[in-house]
Length: 113
Image 1 (cartoon, rainbow, N blue to C red):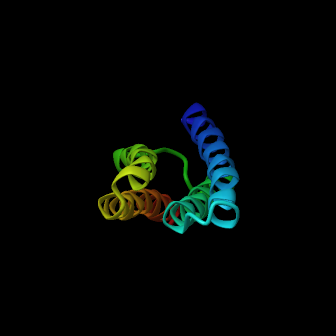
Image 2 (spheres, rainbow, N blue to C red; image 1 turned 45 degrees about the vertical axis):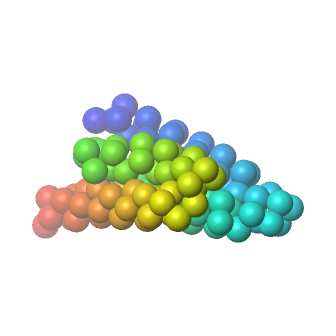
């Protein structure tokens, strides 16, 4: 499982930085708020997951976390082309990713008790 969390640590860290680098200019230079703010919120969510992996609260991944991550990447692209439908799909993806993340944290805490 060590390699799995190392992979996720790298993936979440790099994508959080990437979305931050793309999201800030979208808001402050291009004034495309509908595209920029979801990227910044996604950066915060991925950063939260990254911190939880660093603290050792996540030792494995689950299907909800994996699927949520993939859907988040797809939905951010959909926001550009399809507006409100993309926002809805992005919201669903955030919920899916966070449910996987909190499910893993809760499972880890239950095992420690």
